[in-house]
Structure formats: C-alpha cells, structure tokens
Image (cartoon, rainbow, N blue to C red; front, side, top):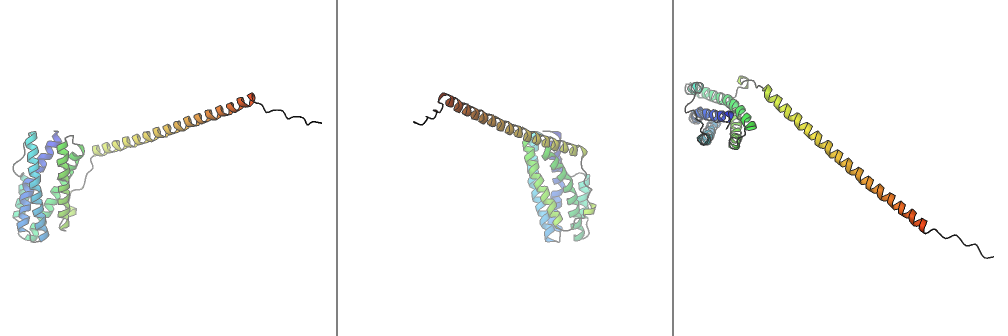
Length: 222
C-alpha cells in the first residue's frame, strides 16, 4: 500500500467524522424537505464508507483519525450557531459542497494511479458516492458557485497524460503500418505465385506444341 493509498483512507475517514454529524443536523434542523433528504443521504452514505475505510485500515495497519479537525469543528459550530433555518441550510449546503469538491479530486487521483486492487475498488465506490452527493447538494439551488475554489490542473499530471496519449498514438500508428506492410507483402507473394503459375502453364503449352506439331496439309490429288 502506497502513501497515497494511506492518505486516501485518512481523508475519507476525516471527511466522514464531520459530514455524518452535519448530515444528521440537516436531517433534523432543515426546513426544506429536499435539504433534509440530502442530509439523511449524506449521513447514511458516509456511514457506509466509514465502515469500509475502517476495514481496510485494520487490514493494512493504517492509523485513522478519530475526531474532526479544527476546521471541521469550526464548520460544525457554524452550522449549530446558525440563527435561522435558511441560514443553516445555506451554510450546510455550501460547506459540504466545497468539502466534497476537495475530496473528489483526491479520490480520482488515487483511483487513476493506485497499484492496490482493494484501494482501486474502494476509490471507485467512493468516487460514485461523492459525485452523487455533489449532484444532490447542487440540486437544492443553494450552492454559491462563485465561492468555490478555481480548478487547478497539475502540470505533472497533464504532462504524463500527454505522454501517454503520444505513446498511444505512436503505438496505433506503428500497428497500422505493420498491418499495411504485411498486407502488401501478402499481395506481392500472391502475385508472384500467380505469375509463376501462368509462366509454367504457357511453357507447358509450348513444349506440348513442339512435341505434337500440327500435320502439314495434304496436297489435293490431281
């Protein structure tokens, strides 16, 4: 298990430590039925991911966090201290949407590069869960997209992807050229075989004519 694999387990566990109680608050405090349902879904889904994370961590000896970090505790306090239900819903949706965007990028990177089959399967599941949560949070209509961090593209990742694409293109081109050369060589061999057969056939006819010339025409009897 690589360092990035361990980091993924830690991050998913850390996310669940505050998103589960946050979802529980939304389930009970939100005024809008849709927000309450989103809170219920987040709480249940992160509970299931947490079970999977703890199982993998126990198997591979990864020490996991056991409480929300300072930022997460402040976000939970912000939700608890919201003076109105509408303020609570806005804080809940935007805090969770921003957090899911961060963990989504981490999960995608590990899913793309891990060598561990179990981590790959877990990352694939977590990826689907987080993407669904992002969609649910956005469906409330409360997300402030201007407050979300601007996406960044890793130069190393972009270079690696470009190299992979170039390698793939060269491989395809080489394969096509080899196939064309084999096809041309096959056609040439077939043409040579047919030409040789025609020459042998004409030679055979000539020898047969030399052995059996046509009889000379008889002169008419006078």
